[in-house]
Length: 227
Image (cartoon, rainbow, N blue to C red; front, top):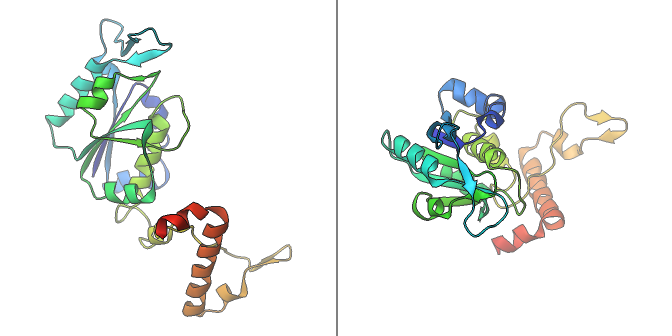
């Protein structure tokens, strides 16, 4: 898989993409993530990528030319399954979206900044818009890193235990059950006896019950989706 990220602040993506699961997946050759500075195609000697908005609204708007030129350059090299714009008014990111995107070969992630991007980019260049929540952050770089992480960890070989992702929260529409490790007792707080029983069937039943109980208590709207 290849993921190309377009941004005006590439430095914001250096650390999130260099460590932990994503960093190891890159080193293993499971994914190629390239971060592109849109100022490469900036306008004029100062490489401007933004300008005042028509209509007099407050805030600067990312210009269309740098985005268009960068996407054209990338598309000349390969075909892309999606050109994704990280936007607060896009479809809400969930595990199903991450699952489906992990099966793609080539993705472009476009990070907005300032007040936003010229709407013609969204009309003519972007194929999909994704939001990481109903709030606004300073730019699309952190959401892009979040989306990339959600995708990459699902690629076979990215996790040491490939079955681990299958038991994550939301994979089956429920929150995951509680997890414990050694010691079996600490400060008088004990691990549930069933987890120490060595009986796979009892453990599985307990985990299913806990997942359902936690979902009903903490995220009841998820149960409504399953009905």
